[in-house]
Length: 250
View 1 (cartoon, helix red, strand yellow):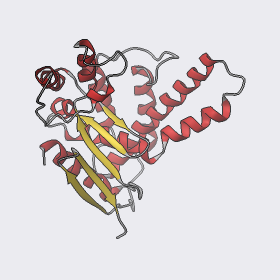
View 2 (view 1 turned 90 degrees about the vertical axis):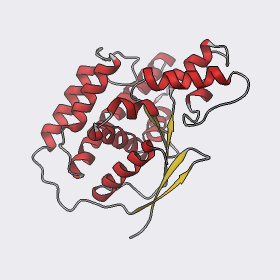
View 3 (view 1 turned 180 degrees about the horizontal axis):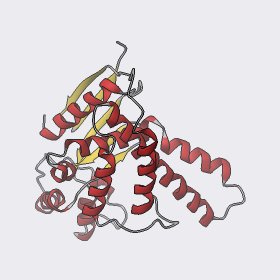
View 4 (view 1 turned 180 degrees about the vertical axis):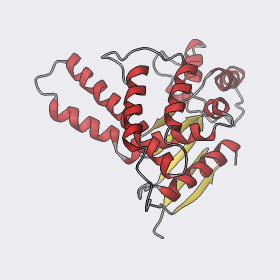
C-alpha cells in the first residue's frame, strides 16, 4: 500500500473514533489531478474540455505504448507543480491528488482537515441537496440567475464543509483552529486571495476566513463530551487504486 493511502487510513481511523461517519461505504483514491488533464489538452491527446479522463489516472502506474512518455511526464509534473485538491462525489468516492500529500508533508492536521472537509460533502449530501433546492426554486429565473443560485449554494456548502471539518478535528483531539490555519496555508500556496464574486463556486479568501473564525469562536469553549464512534473496516485494491472504508455495527 503506498504511503499516501496509509496516511488516509490512519487519519480516518482517528476521525472515526470520535465522529459519526455514517453507515455508507466511502472509497478513497489518489489521483494526479487537473494539471495532467491540462497537459493532455496541450499535447492534443484529447479534445478541449474533454480531458477529465487524464485527471484521474493512476499516478503509481508507469504507462506504456503510444504517448506513454508524454503521459508519464505529465503525471510527474503534476506531482511537482500542483498543490492541494480534494473532490467528493455524490456516490461516495473521494479523490485526493498525490501532490496534496507532498504539499502538506508533515502537517498531518492539514491533511486531516481536507479529508474531513470532503467527508462532510458526502455525509451531508451537498451535491444532491443543492441540486434539489435549485430544481425546486428555479421557476421563472433566468439562466444567469439560476447559475448565481447554484454558485451561492456551492459557496455555502464549502463554508459548512470547512466548519464541520474544524469540529471533527476538534472532536479527534486537534486544536479547533487547525482548519483555519490549513485554509490560510492552502490559499497562500494557490495564490487565492481574491474577494468573492457572484460566479465563484467557492468563497473568496476573506469571506471564507471570516465565516470560519466566527464558527470557531462559537465552538471553541464547548467541551467535547460523549463523542460518537464509527466502527470501520478497510479494503485496499491495488488494481483499482482505491482504499475503501466500510462502516459496520459494533
